[in-house]
Image (cartoon, rainbow, N blue to C red):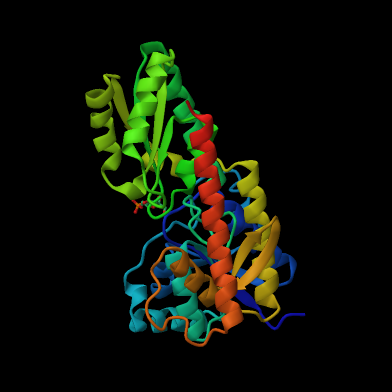
Length: 353
Ligand code: F6P
């Protein structure tokens, strides 16, 4: 039996479909194990301002299939200061909260490390549509966002076909091209432009001109948000260089809402249950990851370094303290992810004409 009597759960950063399914799993798994659960509102801000409520089984009824987050979310600047972190830990102690589950992206996990350092054991669950957490194959919300994007791009393609047009579609993903790649492949886009792989503009324009000659009437181009205003530039360039009339669409936040897919509900439920299990076993500073279909907990600090390595953000000396074996494993994981992305990018390119 765990020594934990009470735990908290919060959602932080950009919301994602499936966060509610994860909250539900955390609440019910804890109650089932004889532990009280507090829902903390508005992310880390709610911890600083003591905005929370004891949750019963019933409080999470009917939220599994809903988008957004019933706990609300926030990107809390005050929590970045030591003072904010100490206040949050004080709130936990005053309310008798022994540990916290935080659901969100990398910023949320950095907060989890800080909270653990303040003596409140914290476990993270990756919830973001971007799929930009390198330690896990999938984040909660990615599958839904991709499926929503696909259904919208399919509609755009119908109208492109009728009018013999191109449509440049910008999809979300601040630092990661994962959404763009999977939407591009699934919608048969003529090209995909992402931050991670150099875009060959000349080859792209030739592909459109060749397509026109061969009778192709629709040209869908998927551009990741991470490339800034490049999507709009491309939408101007296509008609100038090829004569193909072009429209532009930015899907933006519309794909961040809506009912989660089966995959996201399953991932959220499995991760939520496992997070509670880890916390009650006395573990802390872990992030739940899905690797090759298995829920695999990983040290958050290690996962954050891995992420920074993948994104090329590591600074001198940041890996001090890690063994050569650890570093080589990190490099291996980064290479695997890069290779998988390269493979999908090339596949999309080979099959689109
Ligand atoms: O991280 C998820 C995400 O939707 C990104 O794709 C996007 O760049 C960002 O959040 C938008 O943030 P906000 O909701 O603050 O506009």
